[in-house]
Image 1 (cartoon, helix red, strand yellow):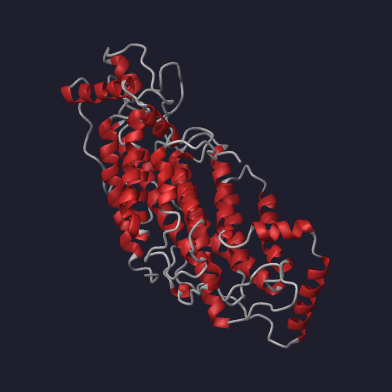
Image 2 (tube, rainbow, N blue to C red):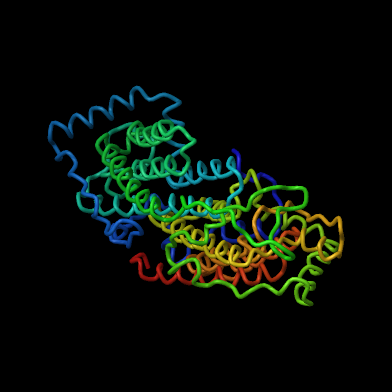
Length: 479
């Protein structure tokens, strides 16, 4: 799938996945039972991000037990079990459990990878998608424990239904929310195809014998209405503002890499609406050292020295965290790492949705904050600075220079935010998450595309943003 890195590179990053693989920490869920055997009866009262409350969207009751409609649904499940094909079985298994959420993140990775590189647009998309799925899950759980409809017990069920009430279907709600938000975010993609994917995901639960048809219908409707609320917020977040083309010129001011005429990426992203910050300016970094000063030359020389002395391990780290064109981009790397961890854990679906929402609102704000600082100062990249200073007139970085200012590092800001959120959610491995955030930040110096100060300031800013997300987590009702 486009956007996925199949190469087993950086030792540290791979160690991150391996060392947290079996971790189930206090902030994310408890007990040793498999996720499918545990309940989350309180999830329907958790604090939502866009919905004013979990019951904002009314969900009508399911068919009454023993009614003609209920008996007809049971008969339909029996018929579907008799007619089940290998294709329907594959669909059902592919979307079971955590894949109900994970498969939609994978679609987002693919869509990001196939667009021109734009990290804040990517982190905005991951944030909106994750919030939509989380709010849909919380709203679904509220309705589940209002109506407490037992899951089907007809013979021939393909999958384990689990202990939660079945109405509405959480798989259908996630699919309805995710497909509609993705259609908004990527208008170049056929909306009808995404809607059909959601319909198939919902229908697969019915064909597997673990959801009644009305469970699926109610879930799809609820998820789509949650998506509408999320999209309404997105339309007001400033993303559509257009840059006037004015930028500073002169020594030290940003220019595209030598030989390129590229325009700067998303100069107004620092003005977009934030989730946990008061604005993108809240943690703006102080100015970068003046061009030509001793401190400026030291920053540039540090990048030259780093490339001259790169070890094989440092090259692997730079490559793993690169997040260049054709990948899920830096905020997507953190999502991929976390999904790999959660696939090996016992998190329930509500807690999985919560992890992704907290991670991605923090990263969305990190994108806004780092872009605010980038375009407050318009600091040129090391490739240009090293040449302009005369340190090496033909110097090239180890990885390709992006088309936006250097200071601060977006990747370091994303990583500082992600590290703090994940350290809170998985406290038994907090040191490892934070160490990997530092590794991601220094990887940009290894790659030759950032000055050391870009990374240190980005980490500082990101950690402050992560702390705001953690503050929110402590009051969302899930802990």
